[in-house]
Length: 161
Image (tube, rainbow, N blue to C red; front, side, top):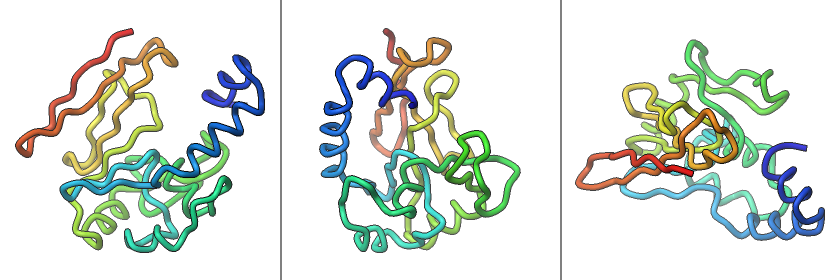
């Protein structure tokens, strides 16, 4: 068991975990706002165009391509997609495939969560990818951050617990 699931099942029970998953199955996989894509994990090797996401039904157990949107991570020094050994599954993606994806979909950047980052906020690849971490209580060494998008500028705001 991992993070969120462990907390839910330890605090409540497996049935509550299943209720959370049912709720998650109604949420969108991505959000596009002002040419910025917001997603939990990253880009998927099997999804090249935003429109392709709509071909995947909203279900409690998503397709492997959708799972990659939820769990893939960016990595410096790689090209394309590679197996993510640290997570024992899913993939890491390189700058090259992110830039291709952004260009193909007329997007400016991708904002994601999923990984704790120092100071709660990390920009990669000339600001084309931003990781925001908003759960400092789960990683005491990290800070939580939210982003304020205003007048084309991004302002990170630190959260305290």
